[in-house]
Image (cartoon, rainbow, N blue to C red; front, side, top):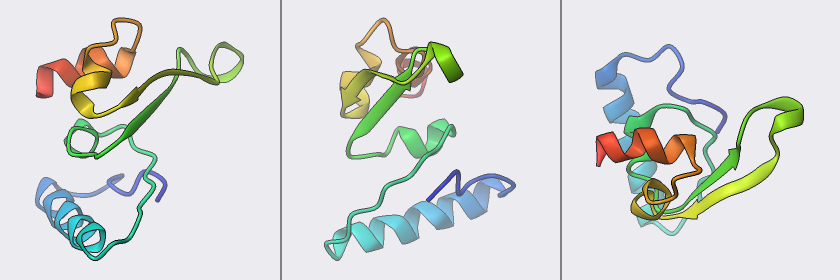
Length: 85
């Protein structure tokens, strides 16, 4: 899913997360590209690609659980994730 929370109300995001969790509980794998920290912080595994966009990006900066990514000081995502955990 590519940025599924774009344009959604907060309650709709909660509903989306509940649906995704039900799909995972049934053994499905879900790949989501997202910038919303409410989604990122509940992921089982994060792959943070950067450090910037375009020519300055494309490298894996951090990968793992939300807590593991938050511990990587080179990760911009990790910096913001720390505030959410």
